[in-house]
Image (cartoon, rainbow, N blue to C red; front, top):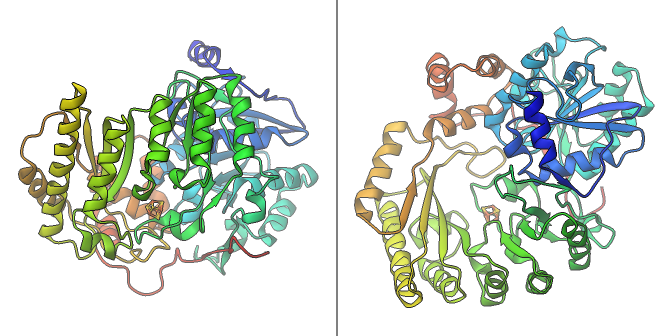
Length: 522
Ligand code: SF4
């Protein structure tokens, strides 16, 4: 275990010195492997923000090996630290978070811990989507932008050593959910809590742009440093939690982005731009051109289809990108319009044509099955769209001498809290199989084509946690013991099916978080 930790640390290139010494000793965790955690810009940003606080010593930790309840840097037991904080973006990782506590010998339930145990903090999308299933374990949830809430929490913890008083103070502020104060004796929220997002002014010329401060070959992107371009999205797709909670699109100034790329260049020549709407940055072409002139290899996270323009794709291809990801979601214009994504199949095919002409040969397309009012015609439309796109790629492949790869990834709709679909039911497994089989039969055999089927059980579990409350905690506790997923779903089948395969009626208990506007003053 020690050797493995040293091997990972030795492979890292860092642009920031992070000290583990400080009056407040903080562990920043990711509830999954080192590989996935270090691939997350949000995680790296939370580490950097903690390291920027005077008197705070920071170490990292991850679920499972090689940390197993210890910090990565020093191999220190997690129970010896003052604060343990997780950045948790995926519901499926909630059980890993509890498994880490088990490995560290820290009681899972808050009521079984005392002031000698670390303060447990959880932020990230999971905290804001629905913190209730984890509420019996966690002391403080951070609801919103880490920049606004996480250093402030640490500074308050430095000032107030008394745990009871610290929680009282945080419970009074917007942006924190403190279960010991905000839940009634039945475990129900006793009032509304307010989420706090970065507003226009905080994204302006004084904004610090999140970038990776560590690159390593042991990530999804292999030595690629990530840069955040913007927050929010110009669209409001009806299934998308991000669009209803992060507010409208706010881009960082190009100057700030380029300045941070200078820091990144000290450790890598591979850059990845990430955001929900990367292609919508108003000065993206200029930023890409600058990266090309610096000799940087560039990649973008998925592009909104309207952003697939030559002025974006040409410099991207010139910087080495050969692949792009888009999300048509469904196969007919009509259902897409009802999703509030009014993009036609014609526009999608034209966008692929542009990408091919610009030299981006590989394409990944994401689809969701199980959308409300979806018909077999919509599903057959997916097959037709893929065939048409494949034909375009084939024509360009022949001209080029080799065809790129087309990858279609499918998910089942997981209705998310705070979206217009939040009360919808999920597909049954049987129906999900039927719908996928309809698409696959209609597709027939295509060359240079790969299809990924939905991970149905994971989606069901995700929906269950998204709609859960404190009574969901025992299922999470079981999951944290490493029980096989199939056995877990079988054991809790009645609860899981009742909350996922039926429409939500009445006033759901998870609906207690409101979002502060991003344009006006708070
Ligand atoms: S374009 Fe993407 S991020 Fe924006 S609302 Fe739609 S799904 Fe969400």
